[in-house]
Amino acid sequence: MEPQQGQGKPHLPPPSLWPIGFAIGIVCILVGLIVSWPAAAVGVAVTVVFGFLWVRDVTGGYRRRDIGTEPAVGGPESATEGAPAIPADRGEAAMPEPAPGERFPRSVFLEGATLGLGSVIAGIVTVPIVGFSIAPVFQHVHHDEIDLGPISNFKEGQYVVTTFLRDPSEGEISRRTAYIRNNGFLDNKPSFTVLSNRCAHLGCPVQPNGPMFDKQKLEETTKTGDVTLIPALPAGGFGCPCHGGQYDQEGNRTAGPPVRALDRYEFYIRNGRLAVGRTYSVSHVDGAGASAKIHKYKETGPGQHVDGPEQWFYPLQPPS
Amino acid sequence: MLAAAQYPLDWLEERSGLIGGLRYFLFRKVPGDSGWWHTLGSATLTAFLVQLGTGVILAMYYKPDPKSAYESVQHINNDVTLGWLVRGMHRWGASVFIILIFFHMARVFLFGAYKYPRELNWVVGVLLLPLALLEGFSGYLLPYDQTAYWATVVGININGTGPFIGPFLASFLRSGPEITGDTLSRFYSIHMLLLPGAILGLIGLHLYLVVRLGVSSPPWSPEAAGRERAEPPPVPGSGLVNPAPRGVTKRPD
Image (tube, rainbow over all chains, first blue to last red):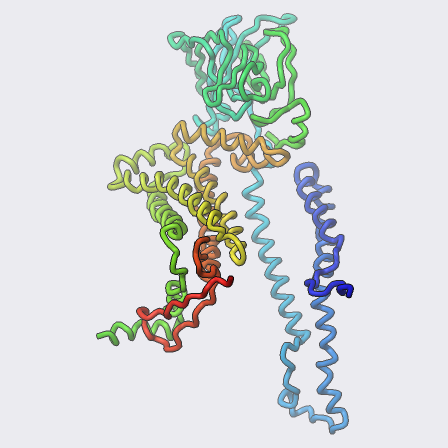
């Protein structure tokens, strides 16, 4: 005998499209938070509409059952139809005992109101707390130009290990190191190579592969904090102590785990003084010195590819 | 004499049911051939409680500020009476906690104790494991020496290499594009408020399921794994000393 369909199977709700729309709305909100506020607003609208429809769909079974019990409420009344009307002053005492599990619209309303108000309150409390903790992710940080002192401190063709305060208001914790080389003049304009010492693997500080001349150390006090300048001869380029990444003198990766060349600082010449600004990422550098061709990208975290197919893993970057 | 000791317990039981609850928790039937392997979970719990206790004391002296964090740890180590011991317990206890978690997990896996009806308890354990590892990660920054700082830089940047949301995750952990003083206080808050709270809640759920479902017998046991719980003794106030007799259910062949 053919087995009957659906026998012994749990009763599952029928498949529904609402959760998919709901999920699309959530995605729209998250993308919109980063990209644009109107998109986020559309996402909120989509989420609310589909969420409502979904909840309505899911709770439909319960609500239909409630409706089904309503005739039972009227049951005892209809049984007393033939009897004389109960005098109004008898009040509640005359009311029939509620059947077990019977629901009253008023208690359903109160239950819904409690849950609804509770979730509104929870939402009002939660949104600022969560927003407060994730807001720094989406905020731009303003960086002033950092004054590194007169250009004459940088001998042509000589790398100088320069440390400075990236954000003077943060103090010593913001001390950063750059490897700076004066490349002489290009079209009558001074040219500098300003490498960040942040390894492009996982952010450890790379070191010059060669001597540092500590005795020639210079200390400059500029309006953006103390700057130290130590000449160095990184004949073997730069190397990272953490996991062995190696770079040549232009910052190109030569060995080890880094995924790209060393980041660089934008530099400015202000009244004969060298200043550095934002950092940018570099996939690789062709050539060397003043005539180098730098393949420049928006600043990206260490370990993230800026070119090649892997770059599609990082389509969006938080503001820096 | 016995009645004098019994009376306050009965008084408490009558008003709160706490004694009965404690009896329910403590005097459960346990497979006769459960052994040392079954103590790994309690050992993990003990390690966590040690971390809680020592952590609370360390928080009395630690200052989560880039300028004074390192100094305050040195102060704990060198000046505070027995500070070196408490910090040492917290530091080494952290490793003990993680190691015991893995031993406990291996025991549950190799004994097949994650099978019906205990799957949900395995799921709770799966949630507890990354929380414990995150405790280790967030606590590592707090001494704020060179090792701590650069290990955290690397750890955050590893998060940053995750596809799509990685850069945002790293930015969240750093509290912005650069490591600042906010990063340290953020890690401190996560380390001592957020994660311990979550771990405590999940441990509560973990223990509830253990008590409800009973301890599983080892794979070589002739006794069935999941057994009926005996009814609690009918006489209230019959004391903590007379647990229900242990029954043995044979494994069905």
